[in-house]
Image 1 (cartoon, rainbow, N blue to C red):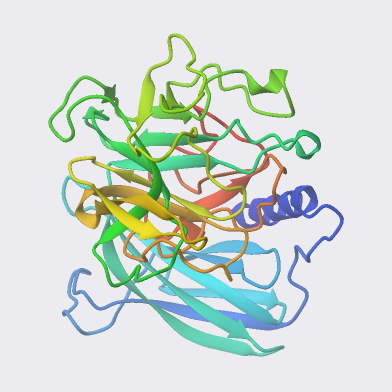
Image 2: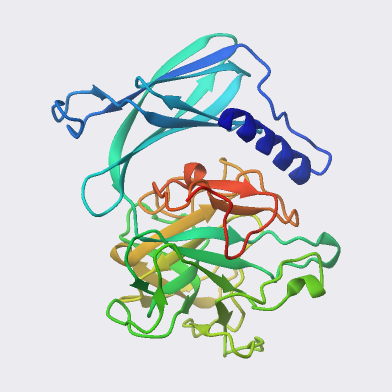
Length: 376
């Protein structure tokens, strides 16, 4: 049943997002992918570190890279089979939750597979253990919904507390990533082109709680945008991005995240097709000077990786150039989303974060600020 629902969901998204240039939404071939889920960490009872052990009960997700198709199945005996596949490239992701103490941990791993035609491709997904952050980005809405008015000012970011404890947003930072792939895997920090900070003292502050299971909506502007365009009502947002250095409108009664980038006079705005959002503790950051492509002196913000709580990179296709290090996010959310389609990208399973947004996120036909229809 779940597999059928995912297929139907993919069809709906393709119809809404492709604007008459529909890609195939169903596999139409005789290819087969058979993958074995293996752990070498020695975590499975009775196994030895370095010696492959079958991971039973993992869930495996398949996503086509060359057409619009997703599927998911259980690897009850450590093997997952996907059949009737068209020739093309596929990404497969495996994960299984573990109980190894207070923090949530999962087995996770992924591979890319090419199916050349009507034949069986056998491969192995080696999984490792990932510790899931208690605080995470749950939904990002960025693409806009009204092409006739070029309206995209209803962007928002959702934060979620997946833990059983009350946590605090004091001093934390939300950024728009600096759009460059320069040395991203060789440096121990991320770069931001704009950054907005919650009030309060980073790490130790306790003025701005986020309770267990709570979703917090941070809006570009906390107003009812549907009054102006085919857009989202964000009048109930919990927080608002505000830049006092420009002409940004400050909604009365809504608390602000304030811009900490002295060169930026604009509100928080992320691009409609490819960008990255980073959520950090705010305990350390610095400014870097650089010369942009037009030859002008500019400033960007650097945040050390140890301060990064979560990061999500989104793009329309898997062929996009990575802008965020794989140590923060190894994939892309928002695959298949088109500008002004009013689609949003949200975690596939609330509270599940394996640092690969291709697996972690799914497309929604409409944004859902402040709530989710996913299973708790």
